[in-house]
Amino acid sequence: MTRLHAQPYDISANGFYFESQEAFQKLAKANRNDYGDPVEEYKIQFIDGEAIDLELAKAIDLNQANYARFFDLVEELEDYQKVRLIIAMGECAYAVELNVEAIEDIDLDIYEIDTLKELAEQFVDEGLYGDIPDRLSAYLDYDAIARDLSIDYATTDIAGTTYAYRCA
Image 1 (cartoon, rainbow, N blue to C red):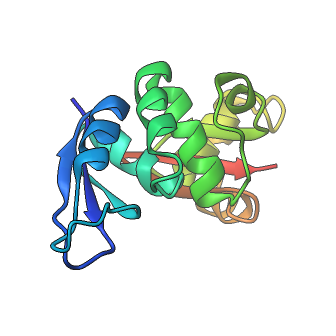
Image 2: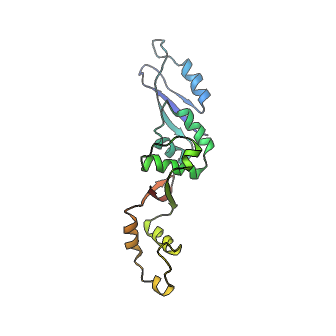
Image 3: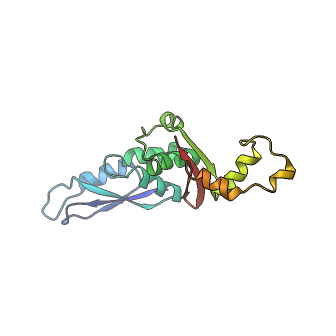
């Protein structure tokens, strides 16, 4: 269950916790400051939920205007789609429509791998550098290949998993 907190910008009002768009609307409508005036503006804070959802909240800059869509994304998206969106918006600074089709269309290369050296080894194994005979593979400098890859690729940690990615 994802739990958020609405912190009023009005210092004479109290905030509240909520777990759905309906709960926010109900609680916000009833919320008044010390002078009896309705509270209109809130800072939305991520309180509890999956680690990947926290990263998603950061990437989309969770706020009062998009909290309802955030709840939808938490339910609609698979983890790999969340990772894709987090990298696109958070690391590559892409402006992405928050829907499944737009997320799938993002031009990114993403690999779940710990280091660029491991990515270099994977690329060699997959034949991206051509056929390399086994007797020569022991002489490859994977660190040098990783340095070359670092021109286009970077790594990031999302919810305890490291990803190598390339923004296109």
